[in-house]
Image 1 (tube, rainbow, N blue to C red):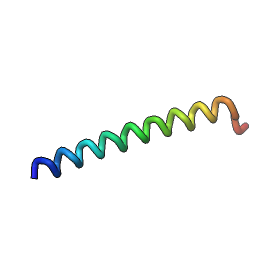
Image 2: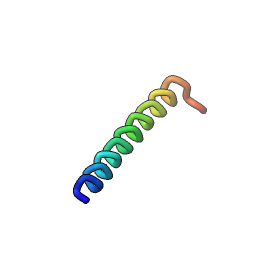
Image 3: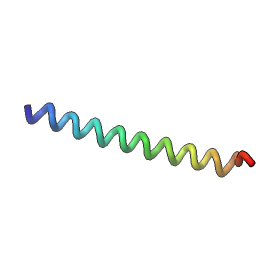
Image 4: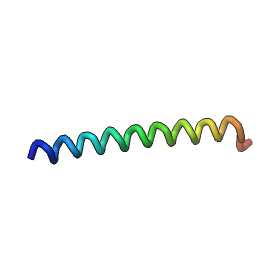
Length: 36
């Protein structure tokens, strides 16, 4: 039971990190290629 919860928390943190990196990439892409 505890391992399931720990795995879920780790997965959530990994998803948050991936989302943050994606937002950084999108922002960088938008700055270098602004759609005006």
